[in-house]
Length: 396
Image 1 (cartoon, rainbow, N blue to C red):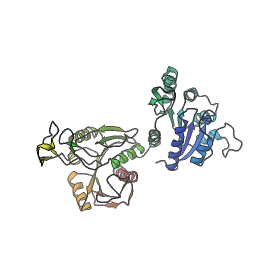
Image 2: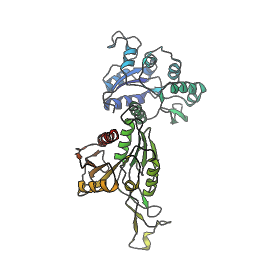
Image 3: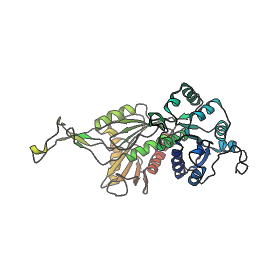
Image 4: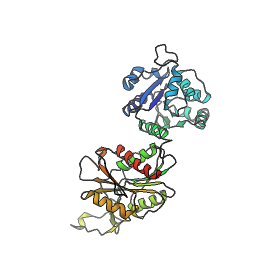
């Protein structure tokens, strides 16, 4: 998503400038070309050499640099940028941008660009909550800027309040969302389910499975990055909620069913990447079952609803088949029985794919019987391949 994207990263004079180092590094690792512009105050906190070493690009600190590779530097950077990101953004810089002041390289570049602008404020809580700052942020939002944060937490003064620069992952997620706004899923509503479900036996025990939710979360993020409005129905997982995505948290299969049915009203696509429990206890004990009372324990299980098979609507349905044997045969049978358009099959016996890892090896099967076998790849890459097929179906 960020490969070959030209990102102008503005760094201003905040103590949080050190966090911009991590941001520049991760953007570069993701394949972006990062041009850093530092205000004079920013150089008091971090040296330009730090950014240059990480981005392998010249760092701009002066309005007029006779040795620059660019003829009119602020105009050239502004024109070639795919996006301009200011992190951290001080109250002073925000005020200058709101008023259209162009007295340094960063403010001039923002004024000259037609690229989308993302601003991540970082300042003292009183400065952020000051009506002047709020008015300036409102002006920038009205002009199309995206404001991310700030977060609440420990500030440089030692106080706890709002004003912290948000974490790097949240800024990158926002960048990806903004860049993908006009993607091939723009205007589409995509519902994704992810993770396991838990069926309680008693207040402390449950029936569940090994699903980590990583595949479903990767699909949700990839759909967001292609411009979709995404609803992620998630079972209990240890993953942070993706930026810009509505997350509906559930525990049981019945709760997931209800959430999926509600979310798919008006949806264009449903991708059921979750692994809901097939069975649940016929009755859940109200109190913890004491092991001292019996050497054995029998639990009557009843079948849970088949969410993908039951849900109906005018949308593309994609299912997943995690199998330990007869992979393609089982996936084909499920595709037909559940009325899906695509099924993604993966072998859960493989140690390098599926559960708990960041990679997957799958086969994509459609109604015509076409099988696309994908090699081992990152789950984020698998997500893109699945969405490529979804886009084909939507266009058809």
